[in-house]
Length: 450
Ligand SMILES: Nc1nc2c(ncn2[C@@H]2O[C@H](COP(=O)(O)OP(=O)(O)OP(=O)(O)O)[C@@H](O)[C@H]2O)c(=O)[nH]1
Image 1 (cartoon, rainbow, N blue to C red):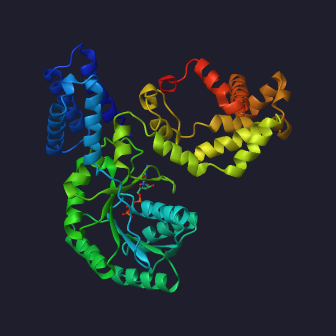
Image 2 (cartoon, helix red, strand yellow):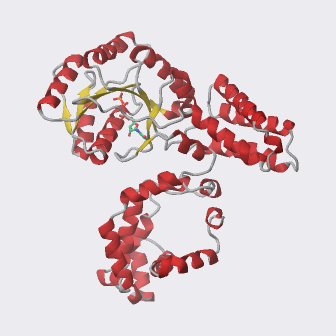
Image 3 (tube, rainbow, N blue to C red):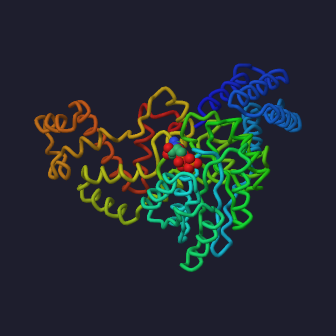
């Protein structure tokens, strides 16, 4: 996420590290580079200029040059300003109605339908809401079909009237249906439209006026940079929407949209989409995003994700097995499944402070556990529960069966052994042994040793 921008900002701050003494000249030089990095990320020129002016003023106000760690203070000022620029505080979603109505708007292909599904899934699983999805695209029958596929995959009901060509009526009927059937939230997915298409913009304005949604959300593809900001402005003029959804943040986006949109339309980014799957949705936290942009990671989100996936019963079961020396490959596999549920590997690595930078030249596969899973699946049940049985002959068979090499099987056996050892130590008094072991571990990423 925003690797290029992070890289350039890091280089900008290096200007300060290179000099023995910090002067007004090299602070100015650093901020010039910061501005250039923002412009390269497709941040609007005026916003980038105002940004560095503000940081400079604050730096002067806080006597950056005379502090003990001027470089660090400057990074902090940049972080605070980035947070402010992206909205300051986290903005919630208004669910006050009975039912609460959420209207989706945006360009074609921006990710409205996918996000409608993600939001429905989020509200259903995390907020315990009964959600109705409404197909209001009267132009493309395939769009209605797509919403049914999405609804099916998350077990959420979809409302549609394929013969009706009046989106206002469809939306109103859907809300009636929701009221009559005890739905808490109605999410109205509309057709994608261009801001220059007056007829279509009038249409969504009419739907908006008729259903008076509690939340009108503007969905925009983060990859479109400056264009995203211009489109947001045009939609905001018509709909006066409540919040922005930035999708495709998992792609190779430069970050400009995330940084500029709030200050242009003065509406907060509420959620971001980070993948095609239904659980690839994150609440947008400006401060966490600023930290990620500056390569500081996002440990809070990482821990939250781990907590969400933490299964207490499963953990207790595993603990018992470790105590009895019965931890096997089936348990290892179930641990992998839990990690996988936390999100894709690239995204997770980006949340570890310093890891993104340290691993930037390493290609992380989306399905990084594919080979490990194949190897374990090629083992017999008895081999999985008693790994000690796996001798040279069995290893060769497992490698052949999983389409891997014997070295890979050996490597996995070693990792498994280390993990079992580590788990046993964690069970020791206060996990002290584990800390000792970690301290002695060589080749850990920089972040672990600091
Ligand atoms: N990588 C990635 N792809 C996404 C994300 N959100 C949506 N997509 C993909 O983007 C494409 C368009 O998404 P849709 O949800 O169909 O977009 P839409 O705005 O409903 O499109 P229209 O109905 O044509 O207006 C699909 O292929 C989605 O899988 C995301 O957060 N990350």
